[in-house]
Length: 61
Image (cartoon, rainbow, N blue to C red):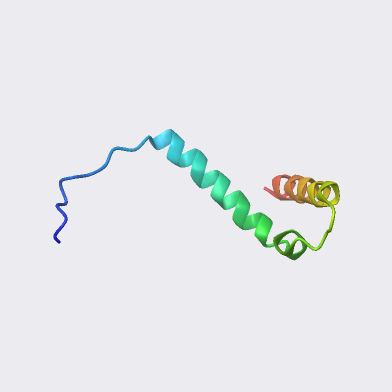
């Protein structure tokens, strides 16, 4: 099966940029081992660590 190069699918540039930012954020969060492995047993503890990691990541940028 040969795909034609002229049959490009349309996409929304602003939506793509927003999605890219979110994917990058998840990649940065996964650098934090405790969050990526989810060592915390309770949801509220996990969420608090997640929020603190996001604050640190945004403050470094």
